[in-house]
Image (cartoon, rainbow, N blue to C red; front, side, top):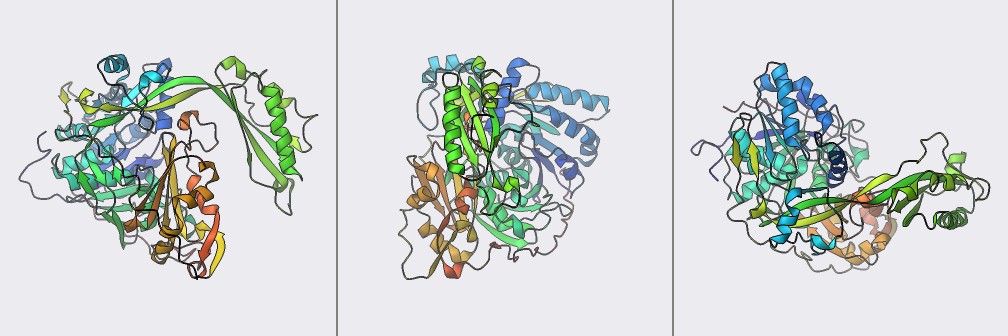
Length: 629
C-alpha cells in the first residue's frame, strides 16, 4: 500500500485525538464535552464490545435496517456544523453491523443542514453469509482458545464479524472523508488509522505503528484513563465527573496522554497503567496491522495531567484475525430476593435447596449468589440484610415463563426462611432474555474483503498486509515463577489493595487481571509475592482453571490471564459480574502478609505523588493544534 501522505513532508506536529465514547451506552453528553473542550484534530468513539455485539446481533436480526448505534445519531447531529467549521475529523465504530445504513442517515442530516461534510464507511468485516463457503474451502474457523472447529459448535450463527485493521480508515481520511463510520475494526484502529494518515506512516513503520496501537488502546475506553474505574480513585480530584481522555500522538509513535483542562478526574502514570494492563493477551498484543511488544512500554509523568507513553516495539502482524461469531443459545432470567437477620448461612442453604426443588425440571442451570454479609452490629434492618440473586437458564423460553419461574419464586413467602422477601416495588422478572453465545474464531486475513466506500460512491480495496505471517505464540511465562519473598521481614496481614492497584476485564470467556505496585519500593516484593499459586489463593473461583502469568517490569505490574473464568463469554455468563470488571478489585480486597514498611498509607497515593485526598497541581490548557492542510 502506498504511503498515506506526502512522502517528503517534514514531521507533523502531534495529532490530537479525543475520545467521546468507550462503549455502547457510555455517557451521552461526552461528545458535547469534547466539542466544548480543548482544541483537537480527531474525535473517536468506540461503541463495540463483544457483549455489545451480541445484543446488536439480536436486534439486527429482527430489523435489518438497523444494527448500528442509533443514539450516536442524536449525539452527533447538533455538532455537524461545528465539525465542519473546525475541520475536525470523526472516526467511530458506531456503524456496528450496518455502517452503510448509518452513513445514509448521516448524509441525509448533512444535506438537510446544507453542509459539505463527506462521510465514508469501512466494510468487509461481515462474513456471516460466507461461513459455509469458508469452511468448505478449508477454513475451519477454529476457536481462539480451544482450537475446536466452528462445525463442532452445533449452533446457527446470526452474526460473524472479523476484526479489521486501520488502513481502511487511513485511506478514507486520505481521500478527504470528514466522518469515517466503521463496523468491527479493532478498538485501537480508531486511533491508529488517523495517526498513520496524519504522520504518513508506512506499513512497515513497526515501532511507530506499535506506538499508535498503544495510544489507541489507552484512548479506547474514555474515562478509564482519567480515573474512572481506578483503584486509587480516592486520591484523585474531580472524580465525581471525570472527563474523557485525550492523546497527543507524535510522529515517532510516542504519545502524551492527557484530558481537557476544564474536565474532572486526573491523568497519572497509574490511571494510564490501569488502561494499559486492561484486556490484553500478554506481552504480545496482536493487531491486524502490527504485533506490539508491550514488554518495554513505560509511562512518565511530564506535567500535571500529562503522561508520556513510549517504548512500544512492533513486529509484522499475524496472518490471521479474530472473527466474533454469535448464535442463539437458550434463554435466561434473573430475579432478586432478600434475607435478613441471624443464621444467614443456614438460611441461604435452605433457600438454595428450596429453589432447586421448586425449579427442578424447568431450568437447565441455576446460579444463586448471595451479596454481602450482615453487619456485626447492624444499625438498620438493611445492614442486617443480604441480597440474593437468582439467575436461571433454560433451552426453551416456555420453561422460564411467569408461571414456571416468578410465580414459583413468589410462592416462598410463607414456607421459606424467616426474614425472606422480594422487592414488590421493582419490576417483576416475567420476560426471559435470549442468550447469545460467543465463538471467537480465527480466520486468515486473505479471506477478507476490507473495503472503503467513499461519499461519492467510489470503493477502495484494502489488501492484507504483505508481510503478515504466522503469529508467534504468546509466551506462557515471560519470566520463571518468582521465588517466595525473603523471610525475616516484619509483616502484617492486610488487604493487597494497601500497596497495589488492579484492573481486570474480559477476553471472551477469559478474564485478565493486571496488578501493579502503587509505589516503586513495593515492586520487588509484589513480583515475588504474586505468583500463580498466590493468585489461586486470592481468587478461589480460579481453582482448577489455567492461569497464565507475565511481568511488566517497566509498569511494576504482574499480569494474569485466567482461562474460562467467565464461561463462554459475557453474553451467556450467568454470574452478576458477567465480564469480569470487578475481579481485580476482589483480588485487592483479599488479605496477604505484607512487609510493614510498605504499609504507609491506608490508600496508596500512586506515582502522581499526591497524598490521599490531596489533588495534584492544577492542569494547564494545551495550545491550539494547527489544522492539517
